[in-house]
Image (cartoon, rainbow, N blue to C red; front, top):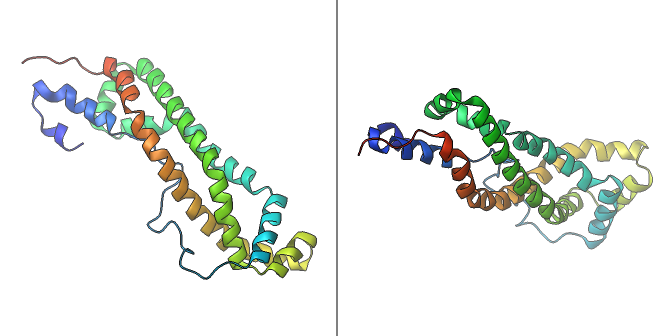
Amino acid sequence: MKRHLAMTRVGARMGVLAGALALTPAPVVAAPADPAPSSQQTPVDPAAKAAAEELLTLIAFEKTMEEGAMASIAAMRSGSVIGRQVDANPQLRLERAKNPQAWDKALRRIGALQADAAEAETKAAMPAIRAAAVDIYARKFSAADLRGFIELYRTPLGKTLLDGLPQVMGNTMVVGQALIGQRVAPRMRALQPKIQAELAPLLPRKSGK
């Protein structure tokens, strides 16, 4: 992105295009430096793990996770995510202003491509995210606690579960974010030729030498 600011008029179009190709959608979630905070801990109690599996089914864990991710993917699909990134680049923002309707259509097409890739990888990552969540729940709560939560979800014992949920869900989101981010990134790189094809007609034609 820095290079094209110093390019000559002959290379300006390629510089702008390179800037466009550098644009990738904001990840559905950001990957942390340590995606597996519990990887070095002792083995999980199998009884707690089985209870955690049952509890996650009861609380519709995957549905909740997917609904949260789909909100971000919907913004991506509308073209607003890549649109904000285009507008953050002065040269691209200038080009977009010259022909906003054509740019908006192209950005929606790009957004749809990106959202399709992100949605597919998000859904594909769900089994791994659930497995990580089971591990996190089983480490946070004992098997007896987990079974009590299942049987007495709305009783005072259930409050223990609710008190622990912020930390448990926070750790689960960390792992989920990393897994989705790792899967989406290569898909986004693979879309660059299609993004280039969408944006090329909108950029100034090469002139001079």
